[in-house]
Amino acid sequence: MSRSYTVADFDFELPPELIAQHPAPERSGSRLLDGRDDAPVDRTFRELPELLKAGDLLVFNDTQVIKARLYGRKASGGAVEALVERVLPGTQEVWAHVRASKSPKAGAVIRFAEAFDAEVMGRCGPDDGLFHLRLAGDPFALLEAHGHVPLPPYIEHEDSADDVRRYQTVFARHPGAVAAPTASLHFDEAVLARLAERGVQTASVTLHVGAGTFQPVRVEAIAEHKMHSEWFDVPAATVEAIQRTRAAGGKVIAVGTTSLRALESAARGGELRAGASETDIFITPGFGFRVVDGLLTNFHLPRSTLMMLVSALAGYERIRALYEHAIAQRYRFFSYGDAMLLNRLGTLND
Image (cartoon, rainbow, N blue to C red; front, side, top):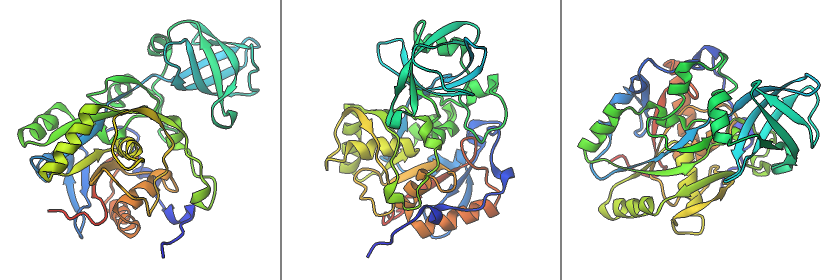
């Protein structure tokens, strides 16, 4: 009989000083906890190519983080902070989280960055938690010119030029994310070149990470939690690469939980299918994985859906032990922190 988990099962004590406030001086200079065998092994990220085999496939999320945070004022002069969650394709409209002393009403105009106006069209999104805004121009261009890097809430400094560069992967191609696919932040051109030399294959998906990735689980029984929805696309070339990898006996390794969620969402019907869709997939212990054999990931927030995901993949007790090891060995946590390499439960490291 499977165990019933509560959110408290995914809690842990993290010393605040282990929350990375800045990235490592070099992308691939981070540490890497190799959690595939019985005993964890402390490594550096530059060792990753030597840990994989020719014919293995790494699947990246090639989303691009947009400068989604805006500061502005209402006509009354009241301060407003907005975090754009989604740009509606082919329009000047966005969905955004809006913080203000008093919520703006439909028809109100907000002046952002003393540069452009946005009209409030009303509430929208799940549970009407977002605001529907119409901007005075192309949203991507306005955000790039006047927005700020949407650093996570646990990073305590204002965004800087270094964050513009480092809170973005080296292979970002499709703008739309408001949070980085952080496991991919460790890759630089040198690591990618060494992976290619070793015969490790690469493919990509796109999942535009939403701000909901940082939202806590507010119900005790995790089965009652409702996930936020995110847009993703799995190209036909990636499906074909996975099929070739399987046929040749290689492993499919998702780079980050967002890549994993996109792949497993695309296989919910039983077979991996190419195409774009929305996903609110919630992966918890007992989930039946259909695509991925392994995962490269950063360390996640206590009581989060991502702690539940990695526990589903590698096993609850194993993840507890790996996190205890990481804390004892002073690994750096969260978006700018270190990485961990995992096998799916029941997958041998051979």
